[in-house]
Image 1 (cartoon, one colour):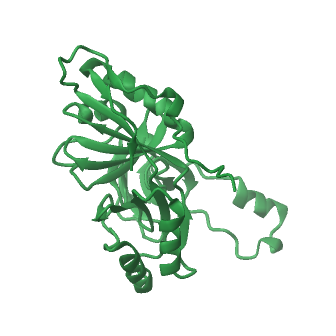
Image 2: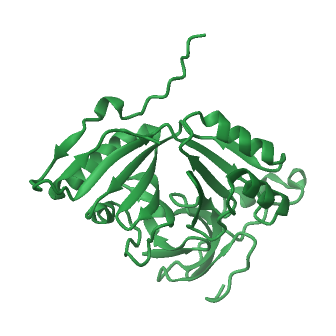
Length: 92
Length: 205
């Protein structure tokens, strides 16, 4: 399986590392959260069937993190972008 | 003062020059060597910072290679792309402090300049079967039209991260972390066995 690093281009899956859900946003004021809200931010993740926006790292390559929109059923990757880019294609 | 910082290759005690492997009638398919006494300095800076671009150009004598996987060369110095904001300056200067000081003087505080000369062991792989040997180990497109002279790629060989630089169609430099050097050396010797290979004397520079 090939993954397209936004800089290096198509490279083997073996060079990459999955780094988690790309849709999680850190709360702006963590101290104001209840334990349950903090637990939800820190530990609880959705497990969608279909398209998922993810953070990947080209670990054994340029070592950059980037975003990928991947279909967790078919493993199709619709788009990859640098962390500040916005993903296109697929259905989110 | 006693000089206790004499540089020794990680492979010094594993290195035997000679011809090995399959019978090759004096035409080994692969030549292996260690390049030692290199200066290797990592540079990280903002690619859109004109001051940084100018500073590197004046210190190295060549433009920063911005295209992913490209290398700029000025005399015996190479500036090698590692990532969108990181490069590796390599020269045959045996005292690594000199290259580091030159770059540090040229750049301001927003640029990270790190001497990494002791971090890597540099292996040179050449010969008509050198590309075939690399194909056996790395999940990279090694087609002669894709991985051409002046290209660089960081990838994996036998579970180790290696930075591969294509010097010419049949010559490659492998930058391996020092502690993996022996493992990589043994892997390369094993992979070259079927072609017959020659281990040349350790290259200085």
